[in-house]
Length: 440
Image (cartoon, rainbow, N blue to C red; front, side, top):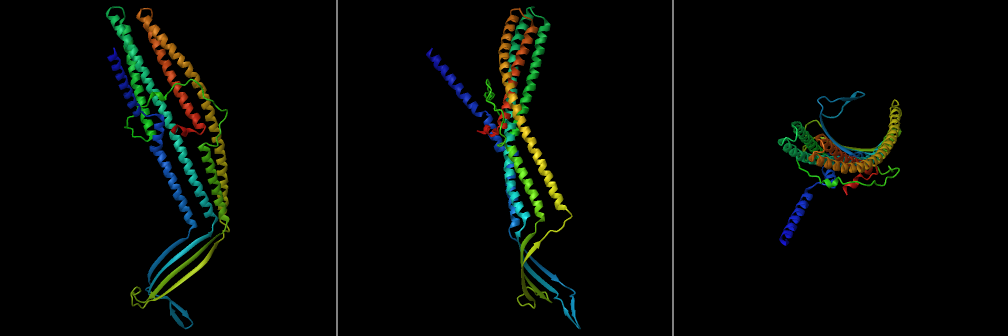
């Protein structure tokens, strides 16, 4: 007896380690969403947009920095013009001309450039918020699909359990039929039922595979990679969490994004207004020119005449009239701002609607879960009782198949209620602006 106990302990210990290894290979929801944040193509592109926004800021900032350019040229004049003064004429230049120079310009006052710098800086905030929103959307997609996979896998388990039960009945009926205690139609009905269950199982397994592939796609994982999800992630729910009457939308990424968009539209309008402002810039140039009747400009002993020149000045541009183009652009910007206000009101209403619907869905789901849990227990008891009665010849096969179908329906309804609860729970977490808590 002692040897048997020790052997049993070793077997249980081996099973424990096997389960531990299997659990380590399983993909929890936390691991799935963290993997998605690191590998999702959409998240990566949103982070690239952040880098692109920084480079665009640098591009606009360059307009406020000095602009320097150089130039060089070589010209041959086959026919040289003449300047006539009284009875005398003078040759204008020589046949060969070479020149090189540098130009400099610096904006001293340009309201459009300054406004553009403000807009570029605000755009960086916009791209950061867009990346946050993309991550939140990916987390929501992964979590919803994750639970859908679990529910459909549980449906496969329910079908397998039903197939096992029906096969027990099939063996009993076959034996009864051989002994002349059952009809051929009863044997055929059981076969039809098993065939239907097999078809349902195949369809459900295909649905699981499709959902797993969709989950891996959202995660940015190669579709060929195998994954295993622990059913413990779809835990039982018995009580409803505390639900607030309303939710603050100030922390929602969608609202922050709309606020930044409106700020950008305001800066765009300001840029249009800046077209009425004058602009002032500093200019300067330095050039070096050589002229010669021969192509010996660059020789050490040359007949060319070289001279330099430079100039420094201010350039003032004052807009006067452009056919009311600026006024039209400002009015268009006013329309865009009004549309942005309408978008904000609509989004506020939409987010509040999502929160209220999530609360209703949670209440409905918890009610359904509790009732379906009792239904599963009751349906299981009825099925076992009917099966026992059938084995003793006190119930018809039709009654047994009806109770088996009722048990299957109750089990699937319970699992579906769990899924509805989890999806509503995700929506509630998202409504509170805490969707990234699934990463922790």
